[in-house]
Each structure stands twice: as C-alpha cells, then as structure tokens.
Length: 212
Image (tube, rainbow, N blue to C red; front, top):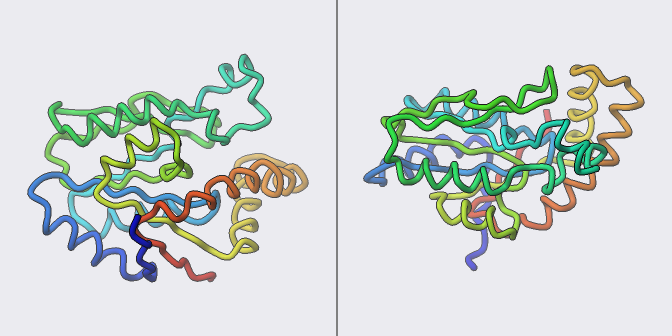
C-alpha cells in the first residue's frame, strides 16, 4: 500500500478540482477522521466552492435509538456496530453506478438524535460527491467495499485537546449538561477516536487541520 500524501487543509479545493477535471464521470471522495475534527465543516466548505458538488454524510446510517436499545448498544452510540454498514455500502455502490435518476440518502438530525430516511436527494447529474464520516477507512468488509469505490479517501487530523473541546461544546449545544458532555467526549467519543485513528494509514491523503 502506498504511503498517504500529507496536505494542508487549504490544498483540498485544488486537489478536488484536479480529481474532477481528470474524471470522465462522477467523482466520489471520502473524508474520514475522529469525532470533532471538522469533517462536516470541511465537506460543506468544499461543496460550496465546487459548483455541483454534494455532501452525503455517513452519519445518516446511525441505527435508531429504539434499535440500539433493543440491541443493548445505546451507551455505545457512535461505535462502528451502531451503524448500518451494509446500507452505507449499498448506497456508495448506487452512487458509483449512477444508473438511477435520483438516489436518496439518509441524514442524521442531531436535534432529535435520530437518523431520517431519504433526507438527501442525489440527482444523476451530480458530478462530485463528498462522503464524510468517522469510519470510512476501517478494515471491515462492507466499509472496505465502499472505500474501494472512492476515487480518494482523505483523513483529517487535529490536535486532541482542540478536538475534545469542540466535542464538549457540541454536546452541550445539543442538550447535554457540561458534565455529561465532558464524560461522553472523553469516554465513548475517545474510544471511537482510537478505532478511527488506527485506520489512518488506509487514507490516500492526510490533512492537517490547524487549531484556531
């Protein structure tokens, strides 16, 4: 396996433009990284800068809270086995095949902490798709199948203290107490971050995100 290239965040628009310019058909790029690193923000910014690009978040494949309770996994929400990984694989396969007039993708609504089906409509004419999520690089069969369909996979990294503070602020913003937010960020979120970090070498590009 080739070693990842290391780039600054500012280099990503040009990188995306080169990929899109060289492609005869649709380009699909994956953005991975631990919780709080800024995947959603970076993906949205790139989509705004590149006309016709769309973001499809992996988070839409969260299992519902009821299913997590039934499985006894509610306290580990956000771990790899709390997502519909086969559903994500199937979506990426459909996006790559580009045979349907429209492909609908689920989204995750933080205000209700639940996935919502068919929250995004991806038209057949969309030329650039940015998939973003925690676990895109993991060596799991469904995730590996999906990863092999990406034109490139990028891994974002940020210093851990800044990342944890972002997570705590996010959890508070969506209703957790300060103590609960801290406990989740250093507990469940940090455990997931270690799993994600272990797959870092599977990326094509490592992106250094500077602290504010």
